[in-house]
Length: 244
Image (cartoon, rainbow, N blue to C red; front, side, top):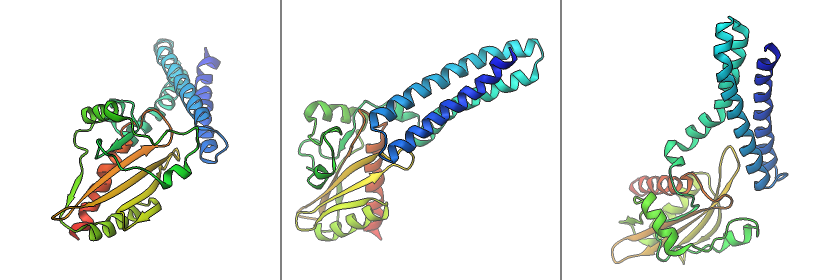
C-alpha cells in the first residue's frame, strides 16, 4: 500500500513533465501539432485516472490512519487537477461549451480574404478558405455579439488607429495596405505558442467607416472561443483609441 500510493505522486509528476516537454517541443518547432495534441490528451487522461485512483485511496488511508499515505493521495489529486484549472483560467468555462470551429468573422457573407497569411501557412495547417453558410450558422449561434464595428471617423483615420491598435496588442503585422484598407497580423498565444492569423478590413461609408475583423487558427479543429474573444478584445481596444 505504501509504495503504491507514493508512486501515484511520482506518476503525476511524470505526466505533467510530459505535457511541459510537449509544449516546449512544439514551441521550438521540434514536435508537430499532432504530437503535441496526442501528448497532451494522453497525459491529461492519465492525470485524471491517477487522480481518481488517489481519491479511492483516501478512505483506506483514513481508516488505517496512515497520514503520510493520505498526504500522497491528496498531492496526486491536486497535481492531476492543475492542467484543468490552468485551462479554465485561460479560456473560462464558456470555452468548453462553444462549437468546434476555428474561423470567426464579423462579416460571414463576404469575409475578408487573407493574402499574406497564405504565404506563412503550411499544407498541414488549417485552410483559409471560408466555410460558408454552415460555418456562419454555427458562429451566429455561439457568438451573436460578433458584429462589424461602425466608426464615426473616415476610412483613412480609422486605418491608422486600426494599425496602431494591432501593434499595441503585440500582434506581428505582416501586411498593411492603406489604399485597400486592409491589415493582416499574427498573434501567438503565450503558453502553447499557437499562431492565429487576423485580418482587418476598413470600408469607407457615406458617413464614417466600417471595420470587419476575421481571426483564424492555424491548427486545431476548435479554438475554445479564442478567435471570438480576440476579435472582441481588438474592437474594444480600437474603440478606445478612436475616442482618444
